[in-house]
Image (tube, one colour):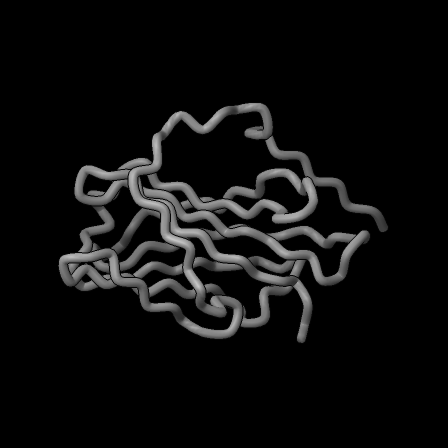
Length: 143
């Protein structure tokens, strides 16, 4: 069985200027990551299921007691290959049910060329008048 994935956003250019870029060094595929955005604004980021499986629904969760996610603007989250062009795989934002939590859903495809494919997860949003981008690196390897 062969699966093909095409992103309808492939040819669109990023129009938002990033004011704050944070390279997060935390094993998101195995644990919740706590990120300090300054001025005592802490953000918990988690991805489930653990292990970062390909071709399975993934849920990205952001939680904070000090950030009202109902007022977050310009949110996007997407995966793309770090070392290989794999397209841009956007996560779909769920409407926030509560102010302190945000959910986005998506998946990553299988990479038949490299079972240890490294993916970049970019989470972008406007926070305190600035565009913030969080970037995580995750291997699809099971080790």
